[in-house]
Every structure is written in C-alpha cells, then in structure tokens.
Image (cartoon, rainbow, N blue to C red; front, side, top):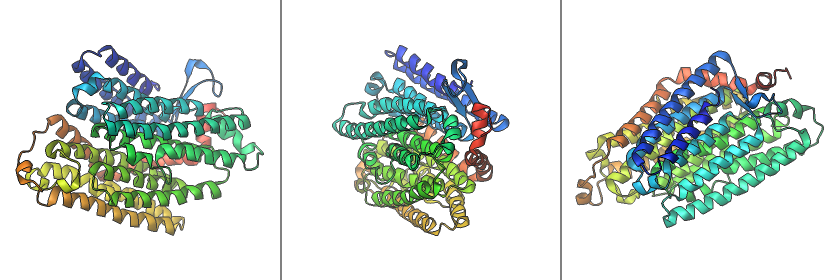
Length: 494
C-alpha cells in the first residue's frame, strides 16, 4: 500500500496510453485515477500519523542494500497536497486542454509526471531521488513543448538545458558522496556521515546539492529559467507545474539539510537564510514589473520559495513547522491563482493586464475566486498566508533573526502591491474595449467548479490553521530528530 502513490499513476498512465485513440476514455481515466490517488494519499497520511514512519523494502532486500520507500509525515503531507492539486487540475483539464494536445499524449504525461513527483516524495535513497527527478524532467519537458508553438519551444529549451545542468550536478554530488560514505541510502548516510573525518568535503558536497536542488527550486540566483518558460504553455500545465515541480526541489532541500548535512549548520544554513532573503526580494520585484498575468504570477512562485527556505535556514522545530504549513498554503494559493488566470483568458482573450478590465462588475464570481487566494498570498487574516507568515515571524523573533523577518514582512507588503495591481487592472478599472468586453465567452462548469473547489480548500487551510499547524509541528519534530527516521528505516538507534 505504501507504493500506491507510484503504482496508481503508473497504472492510469498506461491505461491512457491504451486509450490513445479515445480522448473520452482518457478524460475519464484522469478523473478516476486522480480520485483514487487522493483517497490513497489520505489513507497514507492517517496511517503515518497514527502509526509513525512507514517504509517498504522493495523485493525484501533489507535497507541499506535494496530500494526502500519511506513515508514520514512530511512525505505524507506532500503526497496528499499533490494528489489534491492533481485531482483539481484533472477536472480543470476536461475543458481547458484542447483536442490536439489530448491526442498528443497530455493525459499519459500528466500521470507520469505525477508518478515522478510522488516517487521523489517517498524514496529513501538519493540515487532513486535522481531517477524520479529524471522521470519528472522528461514528462514536464514534453508537456511544456506540447503543441509545438514557437514560444513553447523556446521556453522548453531553456527549461530543459538548465534542468539537465542541475541533473549533472546532482549526479556528480552523488558520486562524491558515495565515494566518501559507501552508501546512498538516506538513513544509512545520516548514520555514517557524523563519524567521517573528511575535513570540509561534506560541506562542499552539501553546496553541490544546494546548487542542484536550487536550480530545480528556482532559488536566487538560479531562477531565471522559470519566468522564461512557465508562461509559455497552456495555463493548466503552468498551474500543475507551479503547484508541484519547484516544491519537489524544495522538498529535496528539506530532506538533505535536515537529515544529512547538519554537521556545519552555522555555515550551510546561514547560506540558506541569505539565499532565502535574496530569493524573496528578487522574485517580488520581478513580479511588480510585469504586465502579463502569467509572468507576474510566475515571479511570485520564486518569491514564495524564499519563505520556504527561510524556515529551513533558521533550522528550529517551530521554523520548520511554519515552512511546512507555508508549503501547503502556497501550493493551494498559487495553483488557484493560475486557474483563475485561465478563466480570465477564456473570458477576455488575453493575459495582458493593460487589455483587461471590468471583470468585477460583470463576473463577480471570478473576482471572488481571484481575491481569496490573492489576499492569502499577501498574508492577510484570516487566510492561510497570514498564519503561515505569522508562524515564520514568531520563529524568527525567537531566534533573534530580525533581518530575515524584516525582509519577509517587506516582501509581504510588495506581494500585496502586486495583487492590488492585478485587481485594479483586470477587475476594477473600466474595460479598454467595452464592446468586446460585453461579449463574454461562456465558461465551462468544469473550469468554474474545479477552481472554486481549490479556492475553498485554500480557504479551509486558513480556517483550520490550528490543526494543520499541529500536524506540521509533528512533521517538523520528525525532521528535527533524525534518529526517528534512522530507527524506522534501519531498525537501529544512531
């Protein structure tokens, strides 16, 4: 059952391939498969919360010699949120993805991408983490280029070149680490690395991992591929990418910098904290300069990654818990905003803020669907973004990290400015072309319903902040004590 997050997408991806000539069956399989995935993820989360860390030794080869799948609370939370996003995007895709893209393999690629994402979340071995990253890269590259339009091809080339560089650095770091420790099982590495006398070699390898995962996470100064590529495919694909792909990179950073590279935290985690500040600032200022709705939201992906690194860099249990809760918040809010952007484009025929206007007066529902996640992203109460940022600020004050707290608060104000800019330009001002504006295209109920469901889930994440923060705190407690992970996987105390 632990392998279901991998097996279910593999099964339904294969079924979609078998139904290659029948788009209706593929659409049905997408809903059925993502619903099954969501149910399995909820079951796994409950099981881990009740019974502790779960693991599977594939083929009964004992760890660290065989392939091992490990699900702690952080993994279970990420798999569950990914399954929720996948289900909503699958429903949105019913009306948003055109027939040619369906015929070219959108749905099989969708499932294989989800398989790679889940594999990265639950693997207990660094080499298999590399393998799952490559599964994601192959699927996402083809999805990015699907349709063959010139901007897509340009964006896909930039995307794949930088991610191939990341993969090369990742593989080089794996080779160096294996040469030092003789293993790539994460629990075994956590057991061996503290006893190795290697000078600064482990810190050097940690920096290689930081660069490799930093490219995939789009952190400063390695983020330039993201706004150059994420705005080129259909917004459905961008929404899926924004919710999942960069967060897998952040998850990998959390995993290695809480479990493996904790010998020199005064150096490594201070660098993480500095990068967090620059990532927040450059992302939000990049967003403020945009007039294309998708590019503006793409820069905000970068900005929000900085908040996640902020908690990891402070490296206390409250800070880690705040970042985990922030991860849930930002996945839901950012995906919701991209889905709303897709609805706006369907109605108005453009993503250019200068060409939009008047949506509030004619489509109040769309305005509300934008306003709730936008204010949440800016950190206004009682939405999830407020509680996530408050938890990070409190953790920062407890550790006397006043500089990064000040940066986080300033960036939050700039985020509010960006969201206000979208509101004024697209929703509040008078339409530039009243005649064209009056001829709104009908919007499919698939788009309305799926977006409304995700916005509602995002709203619940704020209203249920206390139990969710408690769950995040339990996950952070497991991260803060690597012996729990080692004991669960290897059966020995460090």
